[in-house]
Length: 409
Image (cartoon, rainbow, N blue to C red):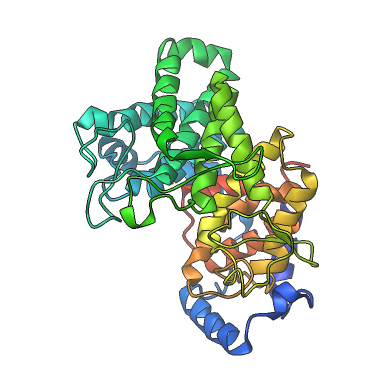
């Protein structure tokens, strides 16, 4: 039973937690007192489960269907809205999960739900609901009132994370000719709407600062930040959507933007002696000429935002662009040698240091694609979910199923 072998490996690792993975600059700059305090909070947030389930008990298709396709689905579809950012930070992850479950099972019932999600998301757009931004403009995106003084504001990161699962869905449909025929003109209608939403943010785009690079700056959000570069997680969300737009619809401008954002990110990654990439929440416009210290990075980006930051490198690497397999192993080491170096299902909340938010460990499901480059990623993430998170959500289950190395041998 190959799946059982992976469960045994995970639980064996859990029982043999180590202190520090290796003695490197990246792992030694966290103070002992900060570490002790963080671990105490972590144990309160994620106490160990006395009798952990097996992977098969924890993550199964039927369990996913109960969570994602059960009675709550109709209510979610009937109330899609981003005023409080729930469409961006909630429903987008549910859409990702549906796409992954289609990849796992090949069952078109997941495409059926995604099709309904796509129509509902379009209907929730500002221009469809007659909403205007605080600037007085009507937008083709999904604004919210949560962040800038309660004023209705459009954020590129929200657009990116809402759009790219829908474009990923269209990519899956494109590979299924019968289903694409079933959708008819609706396929192109959804594609057009998603590309319109992406293009709304052209006013924030800038080429450079170096040749072949590009990024977004704040504009019409918080005036105090106008003109400042957006953090990498926000760039990555848009870049990933651009890349899917190119793959599905052949939009060359979107292709070029995705590649430019990818280069902008890669040129600002710090490669440590432990083989891991580290980066701060806000990148400098200047390409790196040396490895940044952990202090300069302020411990590195928090792993919640970083889980979105790595989406674009993963997507580009799959198609042989900008990032290669060596880069993926370095990102994997960010987890195994960086924020996951403690073992025992423990994750720091910053890439290189403990940080302050143990709850961010919940976001590690998005690091599972890197299991293909280092199976230890799956072991460490699996250890967290099996032994410290008794109630998985639909994305947890979908990602654990999709990237289980035992299923992909």
